[in-house]
Length: 419
Image 1 (cartoon, rainbow, N blue to C red):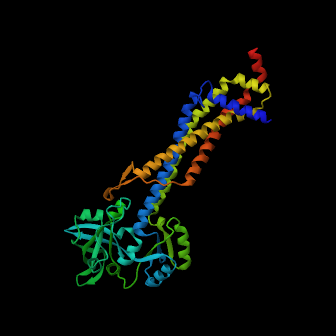
Image 2: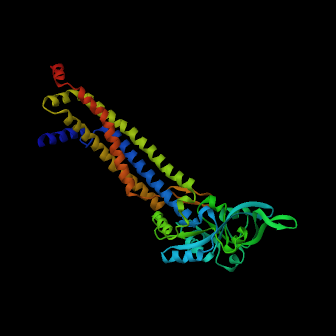
Image 3: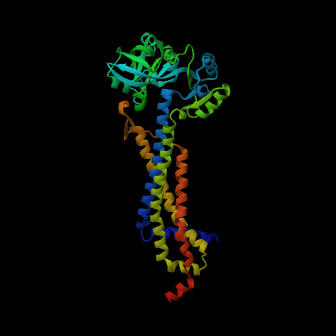
């Protein structure tokens, strides 16, 4: 029995190499190239989509924090100092925020802004967007481009504008703007009037997200409370954790500390964006998987052609005592060898390409006002495992149809035809 198994392996090698002195025949090269390119595409797409997800996650959390704590239905609350102290004891950093949708007026021009009222000292600990941006740090896409939010100008009545918003208003540091609420809720002799404050531009920042840069602004917490009609209340707490890679675990822990509050991680801030990233990764992986399936058609054709051309030889093997199962194993060995070689080459090529992109940033993407950034890449062991599993699965399914033709080989009939 062992001898028969060795002969099947030997025959599989002979069928692969044919008359060629190389390991595989020229007729199999196209199949090998297709399988290699398919695996390369699968891994590259998965790694790039992982990189995009991680990059966008870093940009969102760098602007809006990793976790948000709020009252049900967004109700304001005032006992946040005790909550911050409790969070600090558990190893978290937290900062209060009051959120307002306001309007900026400058020289008759009106621009809407999503204004976040912050405590400059606390917020600088959790948000990269309000920390000074190092000029020589090409990897840091967020931060203050100019100005400062921890100086007297900002605390006494300043505003920090997103880069896109400042460009639209055509203003810079030291310029004054009028900030008003679109809600008319202050009674006067002339009817209801909106809340209005004149603020001086104290800083300009970038979030690395063009849509945020065009709408977001930061103002002192007391100014935001004035626009919201609060005394000492806030809308929510933003929290930074030391386990950025696993926000779900931190969310559960914080929820146990404050069971009467809603605790959301970063994926809830912009759910449509988060869902689209996940959908795009799955879609792109599916498209590249179809490419691998198309490449496997060549493998099917080659096996079918080999079975047809060597029908007499296979008939003789049956006559010599080879079972149909052993003949199927013979061709399955060929398919698995080609698939394994294609998978290994594909993984090596994809890894090299991804490392080159990660190291040199060969391909970049335009981020509008945020400038350009290298296409991000993130390696994941699960992607490698998934690519290998799917590749072998498609290969195995592909060879089932050609191998069914072995049932039609009648050794007695073939010997009669040869005689």
